[in-house]
Length: 101
Image (cartoon, rainbow, N blue to C red; front, side, top):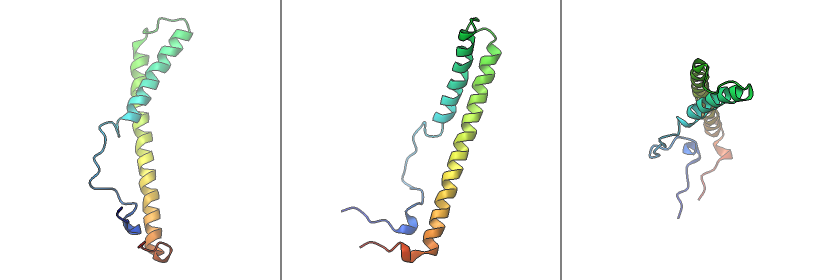
């Protein structure tokens, strides 16, 4: 039989959860790939040598990685804040969240 969670602990992080190796690295890696490939695509469509002006490739890759990291951190902060608001509401209104069973 499944364990019925306490509503107060429902939105707390799981201490036993093992995070994936790429869980916090996927978005910056993907964004840096998009930055690099956008420079390659613009060079190709402009009929220039694809890897000329390598500084543009490096800058776009770094901007993509930093931007991806900032977006991921904002996403995590937003989710943590939302969970904190929900937990606070559950603590203030326990009559709306009775213990099952």
